[in-house]
Image (cartoon, rainbow, N blue to C red; front, top):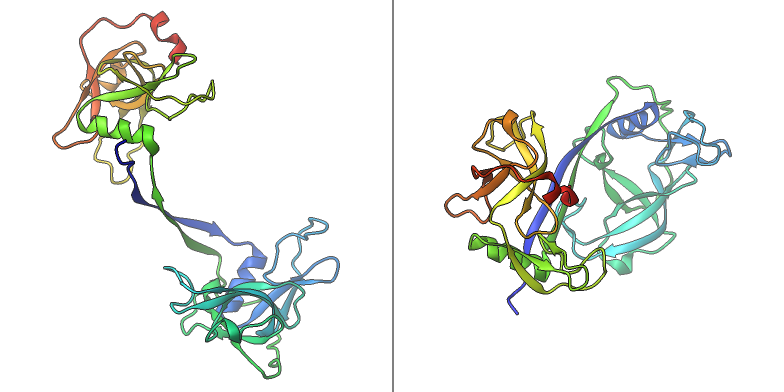
Length: 313
């Protein structure tokens, strides 16, 4: 059996959100080295603050200052910090109930080792040297034996309040397409398109999935399809994608390759966008060194009869 492919994959995008009055006050307060919670209808002070009451679901705005000191309620040791985490050396993730709060805040706790951490230990906030109005303004928690400091009397009114944040979302993982799609990708390297036939319903899946989603049985009979096919449906793209060197408008279509039991995606070229139509017969166009067709172009054949592809729409 050939080796199954695998490769590192990163999904990353900036997530931008606006802030309501409660979250704005909380993050602006962190910038000013002040921690604000919000009082709920049952009298509890919630830190981090919620915008809506967890009991009544009503909007809540009664801001309450709490101390930058608190007590660890539970924790877990992180022996191998990853990129973007608060500390580069091993640390504890801890839930800390700040003095004056009734709920706990999750953040990093800087400690020399797991033996130095315990539930009930007293800690305080270590503020970041540069603060911008984000949760990272709390650099981490650190052990503390002293009394809570005097509160500042902040009410949530600050100059130049933070009104929005941008958070970088990123997911790093190793992707493997599996046995069936590995064979599909390897075949594309030889400018061939292969699918797999279901032993029960006889449908040929392209790209292959390793199993028939309709019958629930494994597929292993490899079938070469195409290279020509038929446009079943299509759309005209009028918005240029970032880092994609294709001029708009262009056509992206579902193409049923000859012998396939379902259609796959492909771009249509070599024809004005407003002349693309259902039933158009097309063939792949490869570029040097590519592992998949760059686009599909008309073959010059007569259009396929609707009845030959209507089940593939």
